[in-house]
Length: 254
Ligand SMILES: Nc1ncnc2c1ncn2[C@@H]1O[C@H](COP(=O)(O)OP(=O)(O)OP(=O)(O)O)[C@@H](O)[C@H]1O
Image 1 (cartoon, protein in one colour):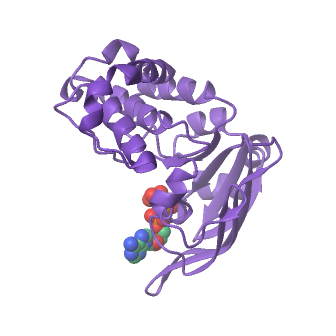
Image 2 (image 1 turned 120 degrees about the horizontal axis):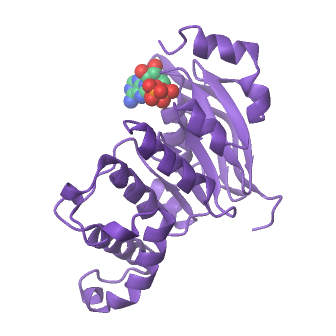
């Protein structure tokens, strides 16, 4: 994909839940390679916006374009096949299986969706996936834990694995919903380093409440409040913005 191409383009995106307008008339363009941070107080509409971008929920009105194609009416699976992946605030892992087996199942699920082949007949070919699993595990710094059962790894390592499970399909656009929530300072630093070293070809959309991590990773920032975009700019500009300071530092997380 060309460096200047639009990876994501939202136009007039609105979502209402009954009387509640969770996202109101949002327009936003994200270019190839950007690390776009979306911040806003609780209830600002960030998760809903992610759900609309992914195709998890339908829009009330507006248009979503992904990789320069109108995907407004495509479901999550079809958008994923185009090269989009997201993580959730809580991802279900197979806790009795090892890290390697979780990677393996993600890879099989991915291949079966793409090529419609049978998961079980392909189990015999598992050796051919090992290299890919080991490469991805190294990207998220979990290569030492490949043969540990999930129940025995730390919370931070689970978050690293969740990132790895999203990366193993080699997405072009990756949406991360609070990748550091619930982590200790040292676990958070690890996630930060992983995100800072991410392949520059991957375009990133990030919702994150920890400002240190968020601003260390972001190239561009969008600020939301009450379902609307209130400002956009470089991390430096947003950090210095009086209004942002007020909604964040003036007790805005209500
Ligand atoms: N399924 C739903 N049904 C009804 N209202 C909803 C639904 N999902 C979200 N909302 C409402 O939409 C608004 C935006 O919520 P959303 O979860 O998108 O905010 P957020 O910015 O992600 O908040 P947080 O930082 O707490 O995760 C809130 O008022 C919320 O109560």
